[in-house]
Image (tube, rainbow, N blue to C red):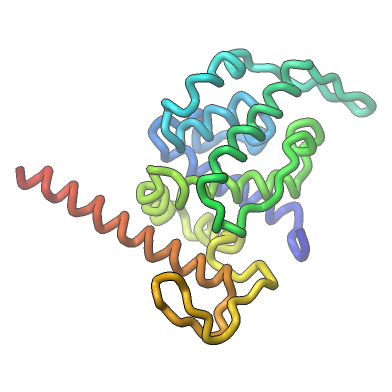
Length: 220
């Protein structure tokens, strides 16, 4: 990850912990250490807390035991069940994001490097994926977006810096005078910029709907 120091990534991971701890079923607390992102069991229940619980019924038994990777200066001991957990996490994430084929911003993630070697760049990718889920692809996205507003200014700044949905990260371009399926014409806009605008628009609509629902409940 170019022009990004290890210190910046750790600050980002800590900000993500503060944010993720706000979700009601989150398995982590605001004062957790960043190594929670290298624990397959915690990652599983973290992803589960952001998505619909019924989608995870087939996986609970796999992650019912907290398995630890034993590490020292010269060797790493890996339980075979940990390998299976890592593979299943990959399956879960791939199945989820298949529902959003237009999202080109999803970073590639090597869970083996993250879990076994505490790879700092994979840590950043894992956090970015969780952010995309919690602010866009999850049914709790409107809550996730609102939680950001309650973070410290420092946390908000670092999360914004790593937000893949707010910037152009691809060389792919939508050519001038391209006509979309809904008849809208765009000029010289990158595909990722267009997706980001569409994401923000959809998110805004969800927030408005959530406010309207809450208002109707209070007036009833």
